[in-house]
Length: 303
Image (cartoon, rainbow, N blue to C red; front, top):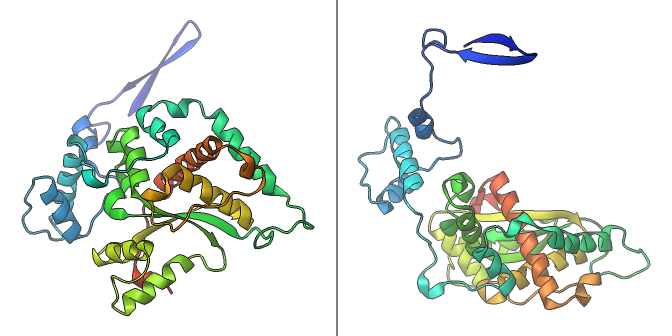
């Protein structure tokens, strides 16, 4: 393309004159842009067939030469059809009052000042812990908080988020969280080791609700999504962040056995303040998830 420059009253006006021959015939139309696929939009053949069928389209043989055609078809279907919720009506989650308000008001993120203040208090509280004070599990900054997500519900949400209303993205992310935990750098997947042991022993129905959910996901041919967030913290800060998110989501909606524990200044807050902190932390976790992508862990990935 060749720019023509015309000076009018000291204002430089740049007019691009583009012809088909000058651009080597590579003019992209709106329809061609719509049909292009995001790099992350990919499924294996079995999942692709299942997705197309669930959207009312019966594909033919999916081969190396036809797969991209069917991926484009699925992409178009997802763009133009509302995505149904995966959570059955009988199991519809009801979150804390503070979190439910964010689902009803899509503009809640326009003013996050009060939420940020709460997190700043927690961060400063544990930034320079007094060595003389005994904190649970010490003061080494080797801990983090994590969320376990069900990919049957999230359904590759990071790749599809541009197709959905932000409120639906937020809701689907929350619905996919089935466990909130605290981990440490030395054993980042310790929460999955027991599940792998049961899997290898052929005991899919043994263990806690968390373990059963993990095994169910693996049995369905998918991997567990483990989102590590708020890293390089001392243990009590990680526990506090864990507790805040559990409070916001409500224990009944998770596979956690018990509610978390708050430490430092946060332990003196009202329940509302604790839940507001949890809402904000979940919001940040959602943004991290959308940015990093959905990375699934299968039994063979856990050593």
